[in-house]
Image (cartoon, rainbow, N blue to C red; front, side, top):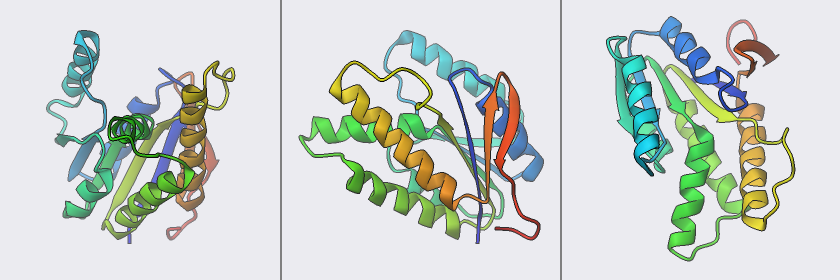
Length: 185
């Protein structure tokens, strides 16, 4: 049974760097699942910068915008899986649903998160999920942005409830919200 860790925080808070260091301390069998699509040249440069950050550090990386649970389920361990990030994963799922004229609401999100949690629980190692904390800002001015914010908030709550440990990173400093209990979950 796997160990699940949620790392959350604001944009540019240091959560990804913290998660990388944390994962590297866990295992040398390291899998990085990147959920960010290349949407423009600037985003491509950001992605390349993140790839270079992991270069030479023993990471096996793959880009996976939507089928994160299936990717985790296909991995062999033991080791560590780092998914960066759930916020973009939800964005991608919402975009895909909109493109196919499908509904992506709370029940659909709960099903997707359930599959992710099941895959994480079966992985014979540690799964670290990174997500933005989106509920601390202003209320968005349009329905789609509010819907997205609500979906991310629900995802974070569901993951946090199932996680063995939850860490909030602010200003580069980790604050443990839910400490891991000795001997596992």
